[in-house]
Length: 345
Image 1 (cartoon, rainbow, N blue to C red):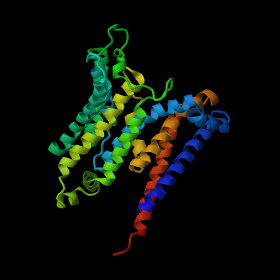
Image 2: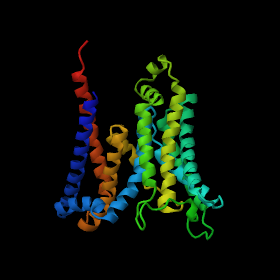
Image 3: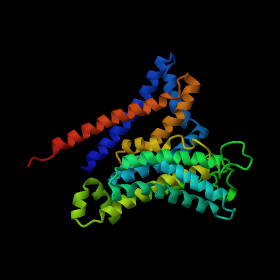
Image 4: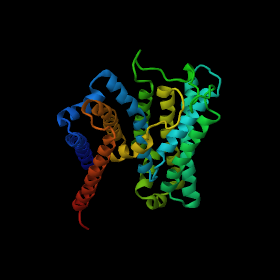
């Protein structure tokens, strides 16, 4: 069965790549541009130079953390659609910790912890509604996304607005609250190794530890997990918190590593794209890395596609949708294949 998952993951990745490139070529034809040049621009615009590669990695970091958070939640039986709101709350808390707290050495640690805690607590609200009141978390996490969005807007127009009061944004974080670049003069900041280490840690927890076994059991069959004596309610609440903390950490890293300040519409919908990342990866943590790279490449390459071939970059979103539709069809075929290979009773 594990071999089947690997085969389908490889097939899904190859099909996703072919669909994205094919969609770009088709869009170029419809726009009257050269499809070959468009496809080349899509790829070279994200990995064709050190600058484009660095820009791609900057998109990869938040997609990786939010994607891992969504995959962790779904594997645990938690339908977390609120990574966007958790990302925003992490960014908001990180900005407050960086701007309102007097600067001190190592302040960046406080910034990152504040973001992770805020994201975890925000997700826990939905967890409590599910466990105490029986409210489906799909509804609550979606609603909490909007509340988080308006809280950020209120903050940058109110208590966190810059001293000059010129724009709806916070003052910049001090150097002590920022993540430095990995290489002198480079675009990529220290958030990349943090994201990779966290991803590895989540993968190990899910696949190699007792809590991970309990979470996977609850995700596959909560009733059976209860009969086995697993503390399902406690584990599910923990899954909400961990998933939200990962998205909140992504928001904090975005503030401390890239933007340096909070402003409206921060994040570019990373929390929503994370759902696509998780499903393209088949909810497997190692697969999230490759799925996040794919979507980051598509996102950054789309800008070059617009410049070089005149194809609107918004079509990259359509390419993502087309990719997910095809991958969903593949997932259905995978289930049918698995059913046909089950031994008859």
